[in-house]
Amino acid sequence: MTDDAKGANGLRPRTNLVRGGTNRSDFQETCEAIFATSGYIYLSAEEAEAAFKGENDKYIYSRFSNPTVTMFEQRMALLEGNETCRATATGMAAVFASLMCMLHAGDHVVSSRALFGSCLFVVSEILPRYGIAVEIVDGTDLDQWRQALSRPTRAVFLETPSNPGLEMIDLEAVADLTHKAGGRMVVDNVFASPMLQKPMAFGADVVVYSATKHIDGQGRVMGGAILGDPEYMEDHLAPFLRHTGPALSPFNAWTLLKGLETLGIRVKAMCDNAGEIADWMAARADLARVIYPGFSDHPQRALVEKQMSGAGTLIGFEVPGGKESAFKFLNALRLIDISNNLGDAKSIVTHPATTTHRSLSEDDRAALGITPGYVRISVGLEDPADVMDDIDQALVTAGA
Ligand SMILES: *Cc1c(COP(=O)(O)O)cnc(C)c1O
Image (tube, rainbow, N blue to C red; front, top):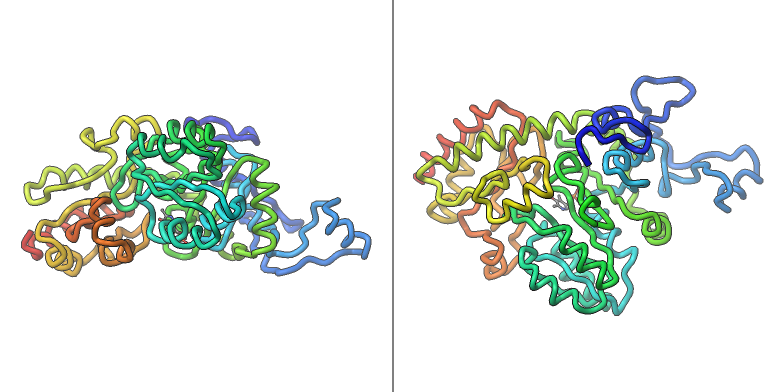
């Protein structure tokens, strides 16, 4: 999908970010309204019966749906070029529901290893408890996918670019293998954001988001979103969400609607800043390993060019001297905040080995390139010169 391809409503993406899904009440408010209500009344017993039979599209209960949440879902669906979207309270609720809604005991699931820590916990610790056989592969190695997907498989779960190593997975090739194995490919598209990568264009069946990240992007609320094919959305996901209840609150949906209005310009500005900062870091003699998908020597550069329309807002690098120097570096930062969030207007630094990926074994961390000196920076909207000044003084203090 190009930047100006029209959505199902005849409007282009930048217009839909601002107006898509807007549903005004009789008051004709300019801004989307927050429908802070758990329930809805019926004008007659017959109307209530018809609503429960599904004969009208009345709102019934905000665990099922809510007008403010619907506006957010419709705006997301237009952005993704999908018919429908369902919102959840957090990104993890989206990840868990996206898988659990279609899995049964005895199913086979294949997942890439380089995942957000909680996603890895869901696939490697929770799913096996329910009799689901999970195989974990190195997502960059197509032979391992081919081998794992040589038997019937219900679902594939992957993240690209990956957290925190910024590795790329070949979406089209893995989608093809997944479909031959009879399954659905679920893509966690958080790192790229909906602005930089459209996994469905490469064969993904389901796309999940933590809306907490770039979509809010201002550190205010949690949220999640799931998009998928009509059969999946109606037969699997809708009843699962309705009866298990990971619903997004109307206030958070409203905040995310406001976030979407500026998502395009924020992600573009953050990518520009990240590119500038990454180039500056790569030119430094004191940093051995700087990883940014925009670099011509990124190990999967061809995939970055094929799948993404921008190189992203995250940079990974190694502070020489291991954990001690990495901690000194983090503690010396004056502007960049230490936090595990990402995609925020404020630049954020994370030490994955001791936080987000702490629960992995040392071997697993090593396999993902998460060394004791590895640091991830999520580049925000500040003047990049100030961010570079901060990194520079902190590296000097750390003695790197
Ligand atoms: C943050 C994140 C999640 C989980 O989202 P929450 O909103 O924190 O629940 C899932 N996947 C990735 C890649 C993330 O960065």
